[in-house]
Length: 190
Image (cartoon, rainbow, N blue to C red; front, side, top):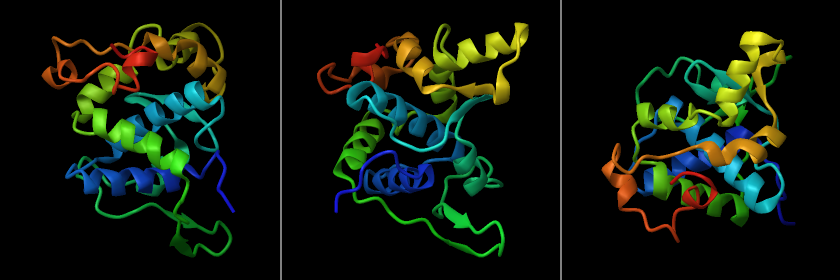
């Protein structure tokens, strides 16, 4: 039976770590959060459905998925070496998160890792904080009204994702990306 989205965000985070490892890239917790958000947004735009279950929230350093945050809590700024696990809330027993076998998920994760996986976390944060983009809208709304849980709704991601910009002058690797191969560039990063 074929797996259909949306997927457990921890499963997609683990897939990102595996794909990054295969590409010779080490990812920190904060990088995984940003790349997961970019993959989710790209999937929403291209496939018209969410990549992961749950929601992203506007935290200080950009969009964060709470379930993935809990899975990697305490990892600091070091590259992640272990995979996300799930914990039974009643027994406290941890177990491996089932891996996804979805080709759709693997393809979007590969695109994101290939194009943005080698960017440092600070650059990924800058991109996620772009003026007019979803994180910025939620943070600014919270300054003047109630933004329940600082959630970034999927509808806002679809409407405002195009406001993310990557300046070619600021990161030389971005200038090397061929627009036909750059999944985010077609949707506002570039």
